[in-house]
Image (cartoon, rainbow, N blue to C red; front, side):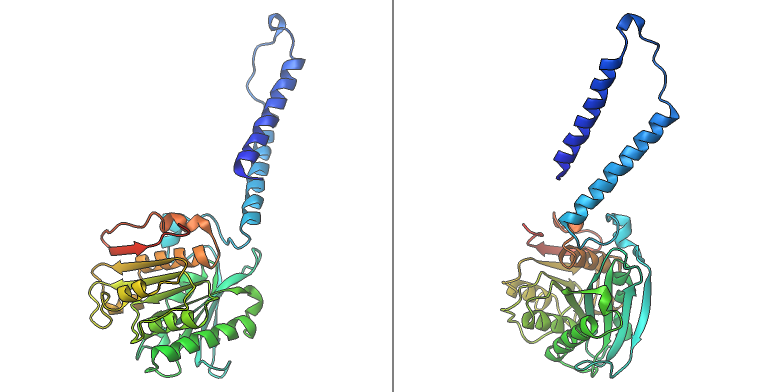
Amino acid sequence: MNRNSAFSVRLLSVASVLAAGAALAPPASAAAPARPATATTVERTAVERTAVERAASVERAAANPYERGPAPTEASITAEKGPFAIETIPVPAGSGTGFNKGTVYAPTDTGQGTFGAIVISPGFVSPEAWISWYGPRLASQGFVVMTLETNSLVDVPASRGDQLLAALDWLTGKSTVKNRIDASRTAVMGHSMGGGGTLEAANKRPSLKADIPLAPWDTNYSFPNIRTPTLIMGADNDFIAPASSMAESYYNNVKTAPEKAYLLLKNAGHMTFVSPDTTIAKYAIAWMKRFVDNDTRYDQFLCPAPKPDDTIAKYLDTCPTG
């Protein structure tokens, strides 16, 4: 039942109650003085309101079974911690094939169902610790997240892309939290050469639900197989992976993605992405929730496109589903 139908039913119920009351009421000349509503009436109204709200919740769940967590607000999406309690699980070397080691961050409450999974790669000569802040930030919003220590600090983007996919396969198929994950809803993310690896992974596996390259660096500019909603972030003062020749060029060259966006951070550099940042987190969360969870409640943060301000120098997009 849609909202209009539900509203019509409620109106009909109210009308029926009023009509019944009118039929039973004494003539106007003998009517008793009006009295305030009794406690019983107030309690009944509260119960009816709760029933309506519960029905609306069920309706939303039926429309999108992947929604996780309460309706988002500016405060909730920019908070350091989301609504889900999480646990941290070390992944030692040798746990799986095709990747080194890492850390899993997973919601402990599975009462709302399974979660989408995200794997994140650091950049050139960068340890896992530099991207570790994304783990709890995203996981507490309702994702199972794994941050990687790459096979080698100097792995090229193509290798990092393979590692992202190998870790994702292990996470969804063999990890101790595999039962908390919906293996059909997966995503990748990475910084610098890890961002290049993110593009490589999405190009190799079009079934991914989302990818977010952060200040990506790659000598490859051709990604003809990307069918994944792609959010590319760059920094206006990045001299390692200049946004104009890399991040924005990749955005322009990703022509087959069903949705894409490009966010250029203002007064930011290449290493801005390795420290907690509200703007980065806000749009990463919104993108993942929108496309991994198909949660249209997050459209408000993506469409209409955010305008340049103190933290955003430029934003290009196709606007979700439009």
